[in-house]
Image 1 (cartoon, each protein chain N blue to C red):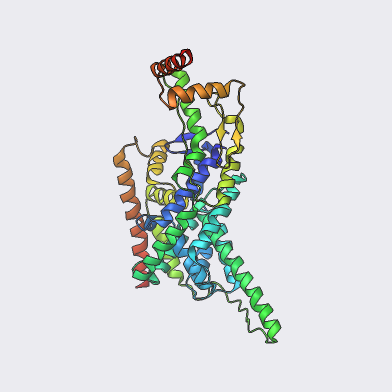
Image 2: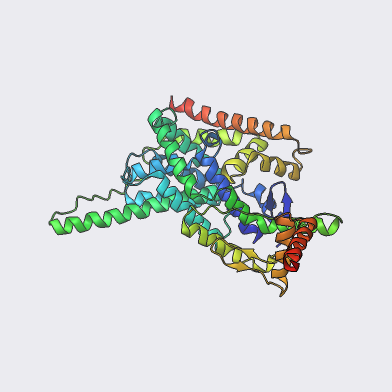
Length: 197
Length: 220
């Protein structure tokens, strides 16, 4: 029961953080992710970001209540949102096909199965990978705890103290970690932008 | 289950050990997946197969911290390319959408309800250990404007913890009127006296004066 409560709290934290413009730069951005997915699936503006996000939230919460242990909550929430978009897309496609059958028109659906790696700038991926590896272990840990695990800066401070990386917990440590995390993310993003430009 | 408290969160010792190991994933597989994801994320339109593939990569990222982190960076890059962070219209839209989501997501009060039993347990422990401490008082206000589904699932969650209602509390009333906890035969009388003397702050002097007046009226 304790675990369920903690996961629900974390879920709320992740959602709240993704809704705040101040916090969103250093955490997963669900609204923008859903907006992009809706655009790519051709579902925008028939479906809004909030509708998908609320549905994803309710589903994940239901699964937590059912006792499912989720290790990377932000990633799980992102995938759930993507699956909901996929469901809506399939639903729409069914309607389109029925409409085509009724009208007697043939489908123009050309399923082009192109190679996924075709056209990908491999240099960008390699550089991104190297940039991440070039970060210190501490920076990697801070970024991972923040973005992947979805913890708050305060929780990260406690974890680092517990792991013996920081000697003791102080309020100044939270500010220090926040700055450190932001700088590490800046480093990663600068490297990627330099290649793109 | 053996939990260890670290600040505001709980982690199992096993999880903490695995955390270091999660950095050592297969590089080749992850790079390939990241390249695929980057390609798909930059396409203006996706087919069903491509949407499924994207979901598969996201599933892979759930078990790989590095991939998950770098996927987030690829996403950030595409958001910046789409100028979503500087588009004034989109920022207004973002705020509106955020407000809509906040209406549906559990608020602070509801989170408190989820936390109430653990709080009660903690307060009881303190009470038993230190004498002359007043009985903890627990008050919860539930926002009835929220959807019925949320309220129902919250109530179900609370019902699962029926046995954890502390002995100092006679009962626990849920938002839909359902009462949790056993009541003793004298609980109503005790509750009446409690309401008169503590909740309503009626003093013994007032009661005596009232009794005297009634007595005088009867005699006359």
